[in-house]
Image 1: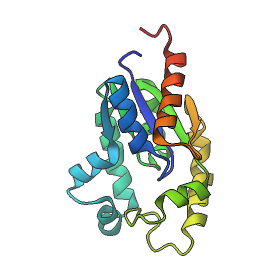
Image 2: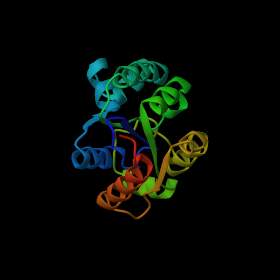
Image 3: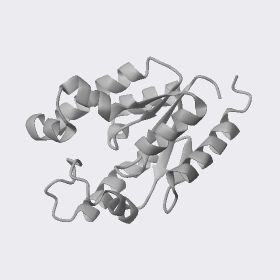
Image 4: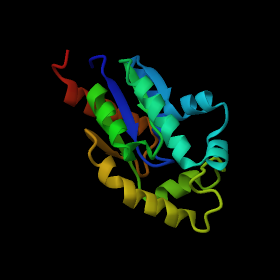
Length: 176
């Protein structure tokens, strides 16, 4: 694999952080979670950013962070689930390397995150599973533009990582 980046997309609960850490460890890349960098830059948690400053401010910071991250090669990047909605983010991340959609149904995602309280787009929502389906419907057209799509339904992190490594090897043969 060349020193290009690998960027993981998908809704909350898709496994971007867990798979990203495992992939980076396996291929010897740095792992970057854009949510962590947003928290660091804002000096507050993501739920606090949403509550105090709104989603628009969160997306502004997210775009800055992705621009900064995109300047360095040899990284596995886990993005927030909505980062893909910004055309500038999509273009940049597509230019710097391969993009990966970690796909799962709204039902499966809900099962994975139903006990988490750090998901601002679900906090206070009457029907979180329905909200996940709405978000998936809004975003999936962009997720499906990824270079690699891996269905994570019923797979362990190790299985997803192994499939992703196989796909990366297939796509980057002869890539230097």
